[in-house]
Length: 203
Image (cartoon, rainbow, N blue to C red; front, side, top):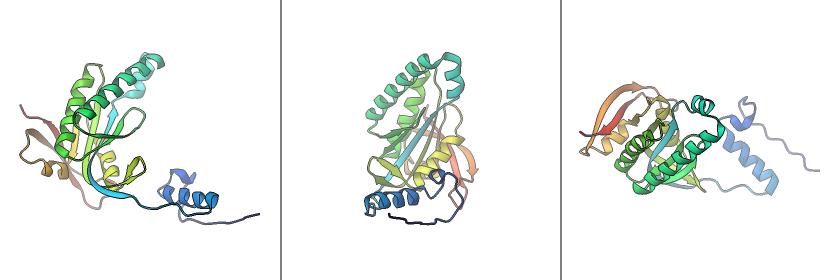
């Protein structure tokens, strides 16, 4: 009978919710298969978009499960239509939002603004958060600090707002996009505060 123990630092309970989830799953995979899983993936520069439906739980409770499912399906269809229009790549759905990547930050902003406007016709408000950085492509997923930053940014966005980092703003200088400063914010995972901006179409 095989008996092997490996102790990881930290006190996450359960471990699959902790920061060392990759280490945990790698050790489990090695134990079950007898071989270490492949580590690392292709790293590329991308603009990461994360969206979130405003007050989704409250809305679902108000209209009921069936109507909410229909509304969510319509939301998903519009998202995928606009994503194709602006040549973005869907990575995955996140319950009531999406994770997508773009190879151009300008298209990512225009897609976000188009989504915000289009979804209003359904009576849905979303938040959008954008950051540009290097991501690691692992199978059909992406990971890395750029994804974490985008997640922090979308959490700070106001309803119907496309909130971006200075990195994104600087990359689209000269584009027909208007920016409103939202001040410096400390984001988990970054050693320094960064400037955030709300993006809007130029009048």
